Amino acid sequence: MNPMNEFVKSKMQKIAKKVDEELPNGYGFVVLAFNFGEGKDNEMMYVSNANRQDIVKAMKEWIKKTEENFGNDTGKY
Image 1 (cartoon, helix red, strand yellow):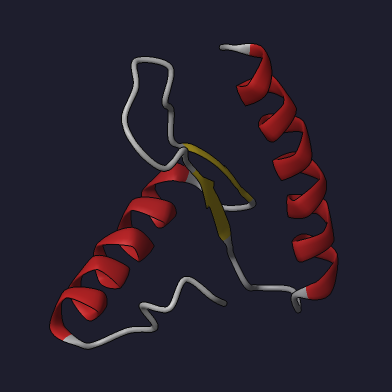
Image 2: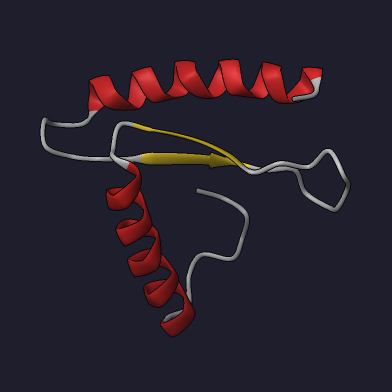
């Protein structure tokens, strides 16, 4: 992993701790981070409080919903 990805990974772990503290028990989450553009060092990274199988299920649901509906394409939250 390149030094910038190590930096981002550290920040994501801090974000994950905050998200986990804010959500009620029984809620899972995934935080994704990726570089814009292309490059050999680009890597999509994630942190989560869920099992991988639960993440895959949630991501499939998210893909289905976002492909079928218009979302917020403004680049904002």
